[in-house]
Length: 179
Image 1: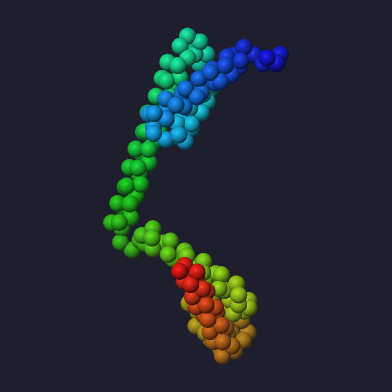
Image 2: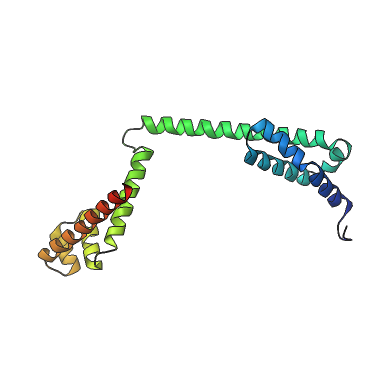
């Protein structure tokens, strides 16, 4: 044992080395999941380290103390999970009853479509991209887009066709890749 290491730290080391595997196994039997058991076992030791009087309880009956601490953590986890699940259920109920709000699936589809459009617009010249965004996103008429970009209305139409063609090609490539 190094000189800098104190007796309480040494006791915690011994406790961890001697009982961690046992506690993790006990928790795995309770939870049915090795990953959650490892998390709760680690949280148990962290709580003991953070506790002022942890070593008093650990000295006398280490497994009983560890089991009690782990049970308290399991109760805390169950409460948090119940609260989380209740919140999600309430949120789903509100979303389902609210008119005009898209479902999570609709939101995901819209985001994917916007991503495809953004990727397609990266392949067109900057003025074509700007014409597309001004016309379709800002809802400006082609004549205003032409005036803003300093080009003819005919050129705006060509840019819009160019951008739309890239969007169509990108969507077709994405559909083909999905197959």
